[in-house]
Length: 157
Image 1 (cartoon, one colour):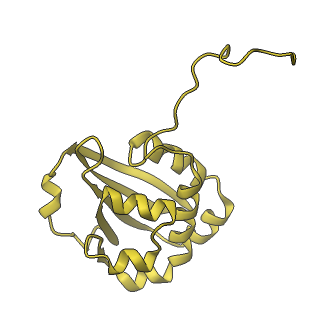
Image 2 (cartoon, rainbow, N blue to C red; image 1 turned 120 degrees about the horizontal axis):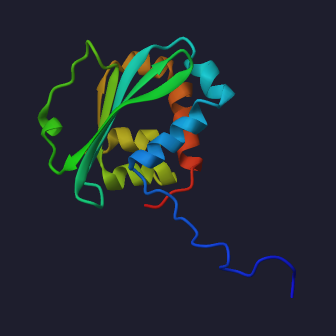
C-alpha cells in the first residue's frame, strides 16, 4: 500500500461548473484576463458583445453581456430567466453593442466541443449573428482565442 491519504478521505470532489452558467463565465474571465495572447489581441478594441443561449438544461435562457476594453473582458450583465425570455424578440441596439450571437444550448455545446466549427455555426439556421460583421472579422483572432480558452476549461454539459 502506498503512503498518503486513502481515496475518498479528502472529502467530496467538486464537480466542474455546467456550461452556460455564471460561475463558469467568471472562471473563463479569470483565464482570459491573465492570458498574454488575449491581452495583446484585444488591446485596441473597446466594444460590447452579447452571447445569448436559448433553452439551457434548466429550462432557462441566458444573455451574457461582455465589455472588451484595454486588453480585458469583463462581464457587464448576466441575465438568466425562464425560457422563453423577453429578450428573444428585442432588436439589437447597434449603437451600444458591436455583435450579438444567439443559439439554442445544443448548438453552443457543439461549438464548445469542436463538433461544429465557425462555418458550421454560420450556416446553421438556428445560429444567429447580428452586428458589425466586418469589425468582428478584423478581430477574428481575438474571438478565436476566447473560444480556445473557453473550450479548454473543464465543464459539464
